[in-house]
Length: 193
Length: 161
Image (cartoon, rainbow over all chains, first blue to last red; front, side):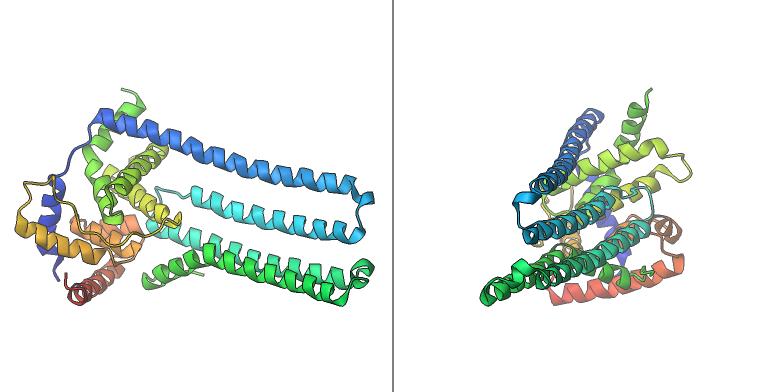
């Protein structure tokens, strides 16, 4: 394999392509600007959802007297946990959008990989902590202990299944990307801890 | 001449860089067009910070390659490997087409960083310039290039390109 043999073909192929004139480039720029606005709208949507969750929590707090304390504590742990995890994952997405396009390739790949790794660890530890808290809280709650034993097991099992599902989904969405990035950086000797 | 005019003039002159990166990283015409647009947008947003410390072409390679890699990170599904569509390129000799086709198919099996190195080598950039874009040292690039050559040789014989 000699790249020199291919350099001519490479040049010939690209010289034969269509040239985009300035007017069309201007249109491209305008169209891209519009599509970026769509991303910003999407980000706003995410914040509206987070805000709605907080409102929901305030409503639940307001109605606390009418709810059993067990459910109140359950809502509280799940909501705080989900908010923390959502915010952390959202910061990863923001990081993705903040790629420094004029930096060297190595810089961006390492940055994204490090941020993603931190987010994944946070997500795993956060989920484990929420599940552990839910189980511990349930096992110390009089209302829960008064339930039928099968129901108690069912609830604990449910928490564990939700935890495992969360691990699986996090790994599927982010773990695969991280593994792929690690492989690329290792192969390219770019990995720095 | 306003800044947008200046920018568009420079892009018009150097658009080949963006087109080549798009071709290296995307296989369908639509995806290449999307990537072209995305690169153009990112270059435009970063242009006010361009101080001319490096050549415009080096700067544009960085923007285009970072955009292509960022695009991949967005989790788009990888399409199956397609051959190139030469329909509009009548001036391109058939012998060159075959030779180029083989290389292009094999390149699609390389990772993002390797693809960027192949592109820059085919562009006849010096190892110093490649280092400026990728962040590798010149020695390291030499090692990478020979490893990539071995990998491409294996790929071409294994897949019969």
